[in-house]
Length: 443
Ligand SMILES: NC(=O)C1=CN([C@@H]2O[C@H](COP(=O)(O)OP(=O)(O)OC[C@H]3O[C@@H](n4cnc5c(N)ncnc54)[C@H](O)[C@@H]3O)[C@@H](O)[C@H]2O)C=CC1
Ligand SMILES: O=C(O)[C@H]1O[C@H](OP(=O)(O)OP(=O)(O)OC[C@H]2O[C@@H](n3ccc(=O)[nH]c3=O)[C@H](O)[C@@H]2O)[C@H](O)[C@@H](O)[C@@H]1O
Image (cartoon, rainbow, N blue to C red; front, side):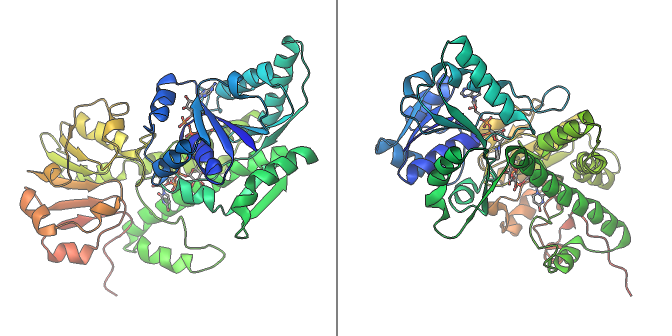
């Protein structure tokens, strides 16, 4: 079996690497020549735990190759995955220009039957647009090759992408042809040996499933953040409330963590894109408007807490920041709350020392205000008036508190991910604040 994966970002590279790891011949294509040159030299464009090893192993075996040309590799291909970006357009809709450009290229060069599978997150109706773009380009080139389109949205999480792809909760496939369905079934068979589920449906439903899943998860987070803020006012503790509600199997205990809002390449843009689809079709999605509003507010909750604690004056205050990426185990800075928080701190005249285990090489594209990036977490603390924990990297979970206290001028900790224990820190002489924990009433 031979597969082409177009786009070598978080989704494309993981898809290509994992498919080659089960024995399939995979050609990964990207328009970014530098990325392809680096990949051919064994240098990965992203940090994703476990990915490098799989890429190197399969590249060495010759099963996984990298190129900028669809044309030269399209012969005898069974399936082509489109995994290019679908960024937020100016009006909030998903911009399909990269997806359509790939479809156009496929139409130009396709030589034999293949299934064209959209893995990028695209609005309902996009696979039809892909089909039309391929057909139009074939027509322009005076040829008619049979092909099918399918939708196979991806549900992996950054930082856990390999295990999510290798052991998926489910694989959603939208198809309208038996032949295409069989090809896709064959591709995913190796991943289903342990009883994972493949769910076939029609194409529009598959496209909608992806948006509905992300919107539901974003809703859960905003809901918990809203309740957390109320807990704080009323003297309740969101961590205890989470345990209380999460033990109801109808609710479940996952994805209920209050924090500083959701970021990343997908929730923010997918919520907006779904809202735009609703509005364009005469059905505004009011719930998502609020989900987004609550999230935007939440991203600055920690900053406002700090400003209040500093009596409104952050000028020349030294603030240490631990964690910059939008979540742990990734270098991805897209829509990270750290960007907004740091911008506000600098605007108020504060001096920022920041440390992140892997995202430092990425931050310069997203943070343009002056920040002193340090090589380790302790150096960031030197002379600090406060420490803000923004990303819950494992290495921040059990620091040497004695050293932390010694280095800081003022032992004040604001924990945006609720990973520390208030009583323990207070007993060590720190002032500690987190998200959604009010001072309990003495009853
Ligand atoms: N990042 C994630 O965790 C997930 C992303 N998705 C969706 O998957 C899609 C891809 O996302 P990412 O991998 O994060 O994007 P990315 O931005 O990391 O990578 C996209 C890649 O596509 C390449 N590209 C653009 N136009 C091209 C063309 N015409 N031919 C060949 N390559 C081209 C770019 O150079 C880039 O390397 C998006 O629709 C996203 O919403 C879905 C699930 C998870
Ligand atoms: O479409 C996508 O790109 C992907 O989006 C998310 O994955 P990802 O953005 O990589 O990371 P998550 O673990 O979902 O975290 C997203 C954001 O929510 C926040 N979050 C997550 C969970 C939680 O309980 N609380 C919370 O605030 C995280 O800190 C992070 O900022 C989904 O979880 C994936 O299923 C989906 O494939």
